[in-house]
Image (cartoon, rainbow, N blue to C red; front, side):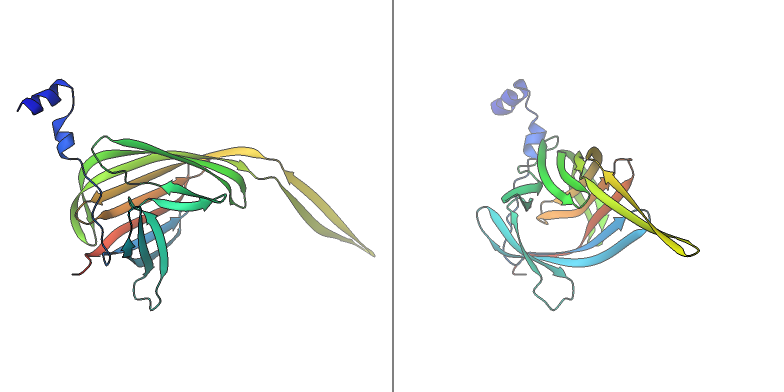
Length: 241
């Protein structure tokens, strides 16, 4: 009782501390099957079912295989950080590009991630991504695997890029009686700044060891959504079961 009274006196919320969630104990053989939906623009979309299976664990990494459900091949083998962060090689360095979970998790906790990528696509010479994550709290969510009381993490961010310079040449033929003239027009695109926004949400269930649902949305400079990626858990099988 004295310890609890001391925590209150220091302004430390006891309930929040009691709900602190440590990193899960993931083991070889753990498997998750997700329904993945990709929406591009207002009309385009596609859906796949993919299985993620843990191959081995080290102190700092999780080695997993990812493949379409029903595929006869071994699938892609991927290394992720122990907190399921996604890492990508940028300019010769391994850089964390997505960190949906930062253990221990407590309601109200925040963290930020920023990185710069040269030539992320043919239109941009560089882009800087900034994302701010926050543990919102618990809410009920329903996915193909069932209903879960999950801890929701939201992330809002922005990207700022530089449009790469380019030259465009357009040619057209103009025909006259006894004469053909070839017209050439050159257009030069000068570098200019552009920007957009991102939104992400993850519903994490400790007993599952991963999120049961995630949404990632990307918006262009005009505020219009260009892509949305959604994953929903279809099945979970602990290793050895």
